[in-house]
Image 1: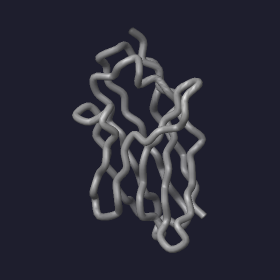
Image 2: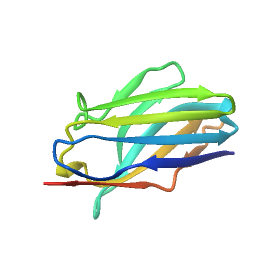
Image 3: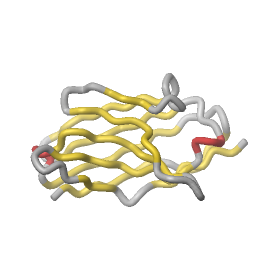
Amino acid sequence: QVQLVESGGGLVQAGGSLSLSCAASGSIFSINVMGWYRQAPGKQRELVATITSGGNTNYADSVKDRFTLSRAKVRNTAYLYLQMNSLKPEDTAVYHCNVLTTGVGAQYWGQGTQVTVSS
């Protein structure tokens, strides 16, 4: 089992920046891929960015060159960070942290954090 706690988010004007953090605890040794997904009202949840245990990143085209994903491990907690720059109103959504484990490939989701970008 992996527990995820997200922080960050909030309200920002277009062109501004925000950062999100996700703290993963529990069976973090089993974590393979960590990532952020987002869901805007009336839309399906979509991938924002993912990072593997080897550090390989994958970004949605809509956020490339604006968002930066990184991960770290401190003692028994794995951290995932998303730095979001040059934010646009279309980035408004609930952002969810996600981890995919090795072995059976179980997925875990955070509760979500709201990001609102005003025009």
